[in-house]
Length: 138
Image 1 (cartoon, helix red, strand yellow):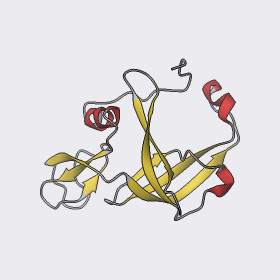
Image 2 (cartoon, one colour; image 1 turned 90 degrees about the horizontal axis):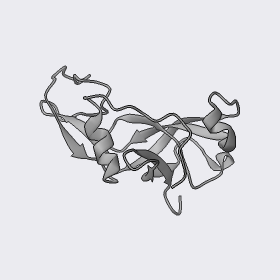
Image 3 (cartoon, rainbow, N blue to C red; image 1 turned 45 degrees about the vertical axis):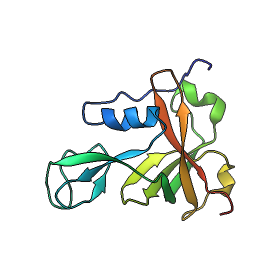
């Protein structure tokens, strides 16, 4: 594994289980114990019922592209070798929207509604990023 030169996310106590799941190559999300709504780790309380009781559950890892942009500007030196690259908002099957990248296809093949599935990028021995790739045959 070569040295990773891009910014590395710093887990918070609230998001640590998400990153531990990614390290196991599992996409995990929070599920409200009161109403069952799924969410990502940036919210301590459920946006549906405002309960702060939750559990971590394994997600399917599948979703669709809700929106995306192709970046042509270098905002950080670590991205120099991948310009242009995409940043996509993924609607997970469980409901939450997640910002990530789509890999395994050219940027001009991306489209809103494209079915995608999670893949895991072990960028360091301690950090794994969740990315998405198109579902075969879509």
